[in-house]
Image: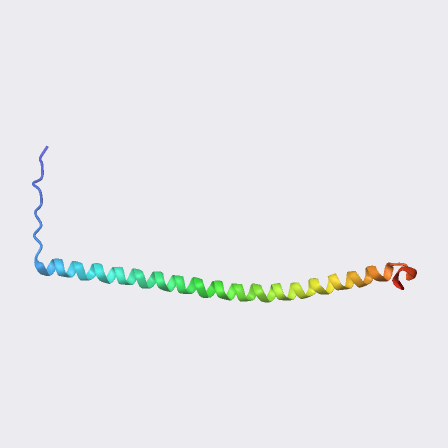
Length: 85
């Protein structure tokens, strides 16, 4: 079986500088992508929270109405002699 001689790669200063520029560019692109995703997620969460708070507000008002209604209804069931006191 024949063995292959090791390959020697010679890098020039230009090759190294280009590699460094490509690496920096890729890092910047990855950071921008991450920031955009975080911004989008944050805005989606804010919109969801706003929508949820509106819904909670409506439900709270509805619940308050029914609690008040049931209190007055129960009071109307009490015997009239007890209500006068």
